[in-house]
Image (cartoon, rainbow, N blue to C red; front, side, top):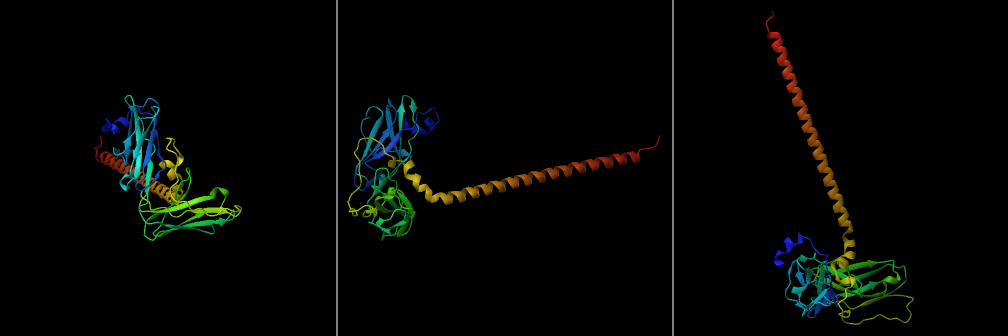
Length: 296
């Protein structure tokens, strides 16, 4: 049934399901995680895909209330880090695929060091810069503010990356950690936390609580678990490159249009020249016949 997925998607489909991870899309190496897929009431079957192929290593539990199902992964390994989507089926109809879920494994490399300048106590309105350093050379760094709704910032770097922020508002207050990574789904151990405070927080000191933030496994989605939410802030780093690409594409379109117009003009000119040449030749032959005809 599922082998005919591409053909079925061309037919009438159901609305796409929701997909999320619990307790988080970031999973420590060796820990367990649940992937939830929620369809409509009356769904009779659910399927989980990993990097575009059916994934059978997750343990599936019976649907709850008939419209959501939990896939359990334990223990988490680097081979299970990647992009997940899910489908559901009602009768003879197959749903659209869910939005992709990026499942990240942490604790795979050395521990980076995170610092902030100036700070951590800062004045509201100041500009600050987080600096993440990893002794082992890597390719990418991520900075994340702890909390269910937070999203990571991304920077490219070898052993160090900087994350400028500001002007600082009360929304920037919180605890931050950074990670090093060789790809989008395999991250290092988290750095020690750095808590950004403003000078109005009297009596509050820096926090350093180990471990990963978690939430109850109650089967409810939150915005940090889907790729759509993950990439919303990451896309800002590629904004300049995207604009350059669009400008280049527009230039190519203009060049192609100019070539087509030039080709059309040359073709029309060649046709007109040929038509004038044929008309001149015919006129010449008519005159020759009139001159050579005997007088009556």
